[in-house]
Amino acid sequence: MGRGKIPIQRIENPTHRQVTFCKRRNGLVKKTRELSILCDAEIGVIVFSCTGKLYDYSTTSMKSIIDRFNKHNEDHHCVMDAASSVKLWQREAESLRQQLGHLQKSHRQLMGEELSGLDINQLKHLENHLQIGLNNVQRKKDQMFKDEINELQQKGIFIHQQNEELHKKINLIHEKNAEPQKMMVWILPRLLKQGIHAIGNGYDKLHPIS
Image (cartoon, rainbow, N blue to C red):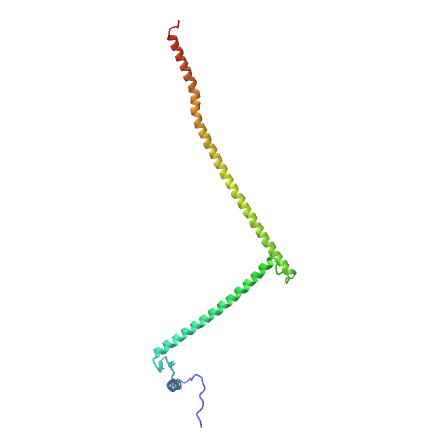
């Protein structure tokens, strides 16, 4: 009578579980050794028992096997990351191409081109967009005119103020130049009068000419 097949499930009895663990662990190590010899494979096995005890077996150095495993994972992740990045940028480029095509088509329609495929509602929608754009342009133009007028008015006020200041300076110069003239007008007649009087007195002192 053959031995019954053990179901693959957790063994509830701790003693039976420990015995099975030891037997299967030894069998695992044996199979690992055989696989390494037959196939020239580099193998490392790490096992923790249910009690937390560590068991390990390696055909070469366990550290070299772990380093090789880590390096392989890093290279694999780098390749996966690069491939994912390429796919991401390809999707982004395709999305940008679609957006550019849509914008170019909208621009041509706004310029009055490629309208044959549009229905009434689409034409009305396009007309509304054009009207909104025209209103925005008109408002911008009016605002620019207002700003320019305000700037010219400010310049006019500044020039007017400068003109008044120049007139004041000119008046001051005229007033300063007029003071010496007034003094001459007042002094000159008196000097002439005094000179004539002195001349007259001199003649009186002279003897009559016979």
